[in-house]
Length: 412
Image (cartoon, rainbow, N blue to C red; front, side):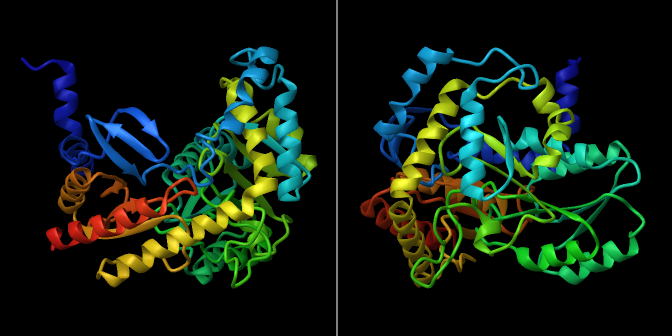
């Protein structure tokens, strides 16, 4: 007789979504790997060296000696791990980083939580409740939908719209004018395409209906920033999508993290000072969860200092790499929708089978990318996603382009 876990697997794997993800894990060669050594942006997996394009260390801070050197002094002062939940007590490292973030973003206050996922499931319900409405972009990251669904279970009404259609959002907000508060949830940069939604139009519609816009800028912070020009399309300072579009924070709660660009386990919400005490007593992760490790706070602070000195050169390098990959793909007939040279360049390969096979072939080529298939993306929109960083090299970029060309031809 099958045991309880066999029966569980029989039920769950009857769902094609679960089955396809398991297939990628078992056959794709680029899922759930263990790196046994790292040298720059090369990693050793199963005894084979791979050029790594699956990390999100955009600025290349993870292996910088000057940033790593910040860890030991901080740990000697504060220990390896703060002993308290944040509501009880926080080492001043927290408030130092929060002040630096507030200055960079141009906001009154920021609150640090370990991860964006914890923020989503704590902050979205804290902002809503019975009689409120949540209007979430269909393409928002899954962690945001987790927060939205939790809020719905607590009494909020949940609606979806498409970020390319502000008129749809306007209609939904008009039809549900009686709901209050109203929260619009959208990503700053889409994690599959690297594209930025029309944030100004969404914010304008939301403002018209007295709605708050929750922007998850996990990928944008540290990469794009204020005052973009033709010479520097990312803008400068890496202070995020709101500044990139020259917007104010009047009706925006800006959520982001430092794990993508800064290689540190730190997430935060930027808010007006009048909300700070309320959020601290209503975000579950602030009240109950474990703290950010001392090392992550130290490297976040050191990274912010490096950003002030060298950020523009690093972003210029990232832009050049990303543009080169996108152009190299197109020259070989590889479908990609990267049209802004953001450092997320997805090669579209179609089915989950193609994603798994593509992962196998890229592993053999010595390339590590992120495989994304249904249900992460639509069934026929599977991608092999490359995320170049400032720590990659010209040779690695050329290797990726040529290897992806060979894989593309094999999959045809």
